[in-house]
Length: 86
Image (cartoon, rainbow, N blue to C red; front, side, top):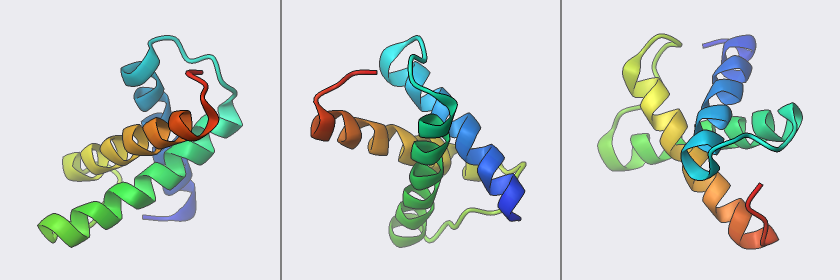
């Protein structure tokens, strides 16, 4: 997957994670994208280490699932560190 695809994946996964965690997305696009990209990396790492399933291609269900799970995890950790819920 290329850089543009990974950025788009991170943006969408970050937005989905925000909606899963808190409902309405109140943060900016840049922070959502950065948390989503970090979350996609974490999700890919977790998938590779635990299940031997890496991030495949952009349209793969396992790629989206791992990216969203990683984004939710990063968003949860971020909210614990900052004490904010938005």
